[in-house]
Image 1 (cartoon, rainbow, N blue to C red):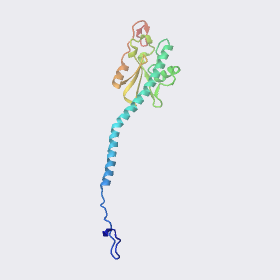
Image 2: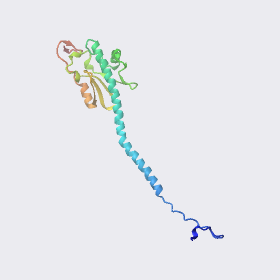
Image 3: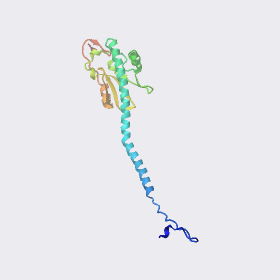
Image 4: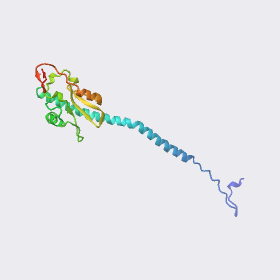
Length: 194
């Protein structure tokens, strides 16, 4: 029989059970998990931040494109109701807005309300008849740029299409001369056409 299970004899100190060695392994494992998780969060953030930013820009672009198309549709209805002629104030957003108000469901050319960012028209179309345009699908009608869309701009064309273009292409497209048919109509600025 072993003495390990017997009660201590009187006068003798009780034997203490051996104290297990404390290990720092648990602390090291917990620290490794916390640091690894933090590192993983940093990596995921670095991967997801550009994706989220692109998604946000796409949403802004989609909203602006929808507003621009609505304004372009109102402009085309105006043209149809006014002897197929564009308004004489295409480059003045506030005046153009007043001219288009009866034809709009949302009565503003302001694409992002409150930001003071307006769609503006192509001054080359002032009082021009729609039938004079040689290439309506290549004739810019309204444009929109914004600080919210720093790398591109939106243009609606006389055929009611709209495109998102890089800033460089946007500036070139909108500044391009409007190609018109030659004939007997009078255009503001002294040019003649059909």
